[in-house]
Length: 537
Image (cartoon, rainbow, N blue to C red):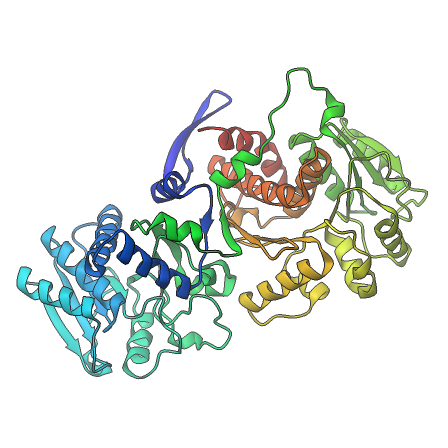
């Protein structure tokens, strides 16, 4: 993302993660949400824009090519050789338009047209004619795989073979060229979509027939398939480029999928009244810990306090008493009658919200307390870690989950709860179904953590980085969500705000250090900076 200086405690940190310029433009024009549409919906939004702006289809393509050009010029040195592989459809037309604009700006691209269809689109024909008439760009036709050019590692490949309209596996000449491109060591930039990748469900796709791009330049919106881990090898780093699609069409087109960004989260943050006291910000109960795993409770409690909770009480086995009171002096303590693990929860009525699971263990003695908690507790609840593992071992208890509870599984924990999935799209469908059936909010953790609500909505997170794949990071998120629930945030708002803040704090911690070096405590220490950044206009 584009960088912006941020003053934190008197120090200036440059290149801190900010919204991309196009994201800011989108928020200003179209509101606070970056919607994620199906490819068919995007096609209809394109058509609406063409009819109602009005703008010619070829001129809309010219806008897209202009954005591609600007991105390319900002990214690569002029000395790079450029090989553009174009298909016969509008994605190929985008490639031809880009080739012309590159040539006008004194670059020397070469276009290779894949002749695997008897017909080409109308806009392809317009841009091919303009390319020939207005430039001296070499235009070569590939009839068979043997026509593939010699490409060196320092060259740039522009993939404009297939766009988001693809609905079946690549085959024939196109599949052969995709395979050859993937064998090159060059930087690959895909226009709109990596050729061969579908926009949503790739469960029946052939992994060997999809471009492995280093960068994917998507127009206006990310695609749903970009959110799934197994597709990262195809998309590389994806960037959305605004092309001025009609705001009315965007606003009126319904979708359950939204990319979670600053413009959506910042308005959810609550302001503190001048005369507020700790009682105004809730009292949370965090239940968990076992012999050797009290650290998870320390991290959860510290994260809750850094996220603004008024009071936090930790219910831990007796072995955790000294640890909690030494490591988190701000926390109060209830010790279990057991020395090494949890055997009860006590009365939860005096608390504003309850969290259970960090470091809890899965001893048989701890099982029944979970069922009892589900049946008796009337407070908002966040359920994590070993509490989820215990629940998966007693699947009949799922029906006892209190409506509105927030569950925070990682993919394996979710698999144990809801069943195995072969791919990210299938897992997403299971997640949506699970949220609807249990009337709970599910936070499925990952690079683009997805938050699903009982009404079928899904938010995909845009913050966070690989440095957060570290012990205790999930415990910190549990504490943050517990804090927000205790402060009175609705379960959905607590989940999306907690997820976004957690990822943003991880980004800030990584900016100060490195992905390899940050630990969960660094994430927690950066939560305050994340709040400040969110509140910065």
